[in-house]
Length: 312
Image (cartoon, rainbow, N blue to C red):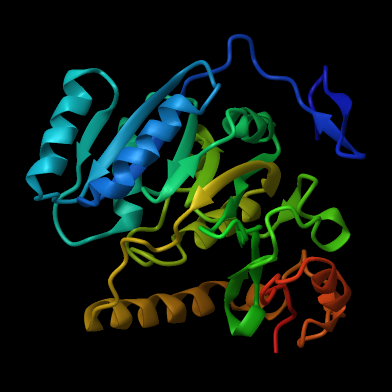
């Protein structure tokens, strides 16, 4: 469903529908959780401020008990210089709760969830995502994320692969068109990663935000998207919005983290089992051994192993 004033524009040999924006564009609240890791946080925030052409943004940093003096000094300066707000989030690490806490303080009509290991490098990334997120029938909107080698890290989330979920087109080259141009055109998917996710604040709050009681660290983004979908909104991937993502650069797999991860896997299967059996946006005829994509992989060596596949 579009709005009056949408226009069709050419884009790399394809046609793209460009939806209009409100005038003036609304405030966007960029929410970045962190615990120390200034080596990640500083370039992340520098890129968000310096490589985002959206005219009205605020930055909220969710600080989970940072202790390193350099980080603490940086956060103080951030607020003192008016370049961002710090939202204290003490206690055990709970990614979903941190994002919820910042969302509750956010003033923007748009909530933009960004991991501290993500960096923007194309100024129009947020504009492209906002055009979709502001549509009345759209819920969560995701971006195309590239890893440190320029390969696809995230191209939408596919449900059911390996009995759980995975990132679509993972390890394809960053310039690969994807299956039926899926990496070139905006399209519906079941879920997108919260490493870079845009959603209108009213829609986010209407479904209760992230479920921080059940999905403290993993799958909270999948669960949010599926609840938005169930409420009648569509989840979209916008491949034209491209950012770098050093995935899980700050994660540590302790025995406690592994146990929590297992609990969250079980919870995802319990809550969304029927959808995990077959993603409605993923064709059941795809071969489990990825032979459907063999020809595409040959065109882009070395592409690595793609992860678009059907459930076993």
